[in-house]
Image 1 (cartoon, rainbow, N blue to C red):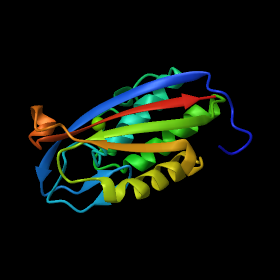
Image 2: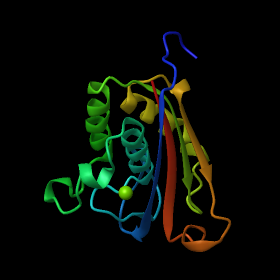
Image 3: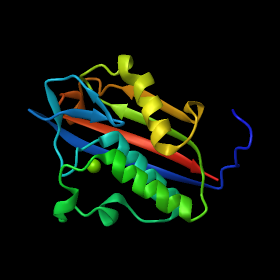
Image 4: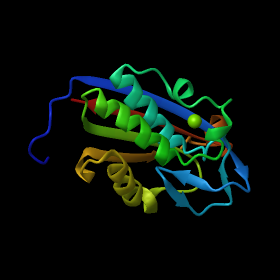
Length: 163
Ligand code: MG
């Protein structure tokens, strides 16, 4: 770990799930991944960043992503979730917090995410203004069980430590 890091004083948990649909781009951690389906949603439906946003908001005691960016508001249609994350990070930073670490688990049957984990980690670290050693990305499958396992959806969980 690099020097000067703060001690964790608050943690937040985030979870999200989006349906997969043919004809949509698949964006995970702000990285576009080649696949015949993408996630359905009001924004770009980046399920991983939505989990990170909710974890950040949770740790800072600032509510949830639905309050911050209501799906009823047309201005968030097709929004780049990286931009939404930056807006939330600005609020969290203004409140005096600093990101200590973030750990993300993405659950998907297909595509296999191994080849993209390093890129997703780097991109998430850039978006959060932290070193790559403070970010971890894990990929799991649904073992063929439930909607995720049948390849109908992708889910993500994130935990964020703030200091
Ligand atoms: Mg979402």
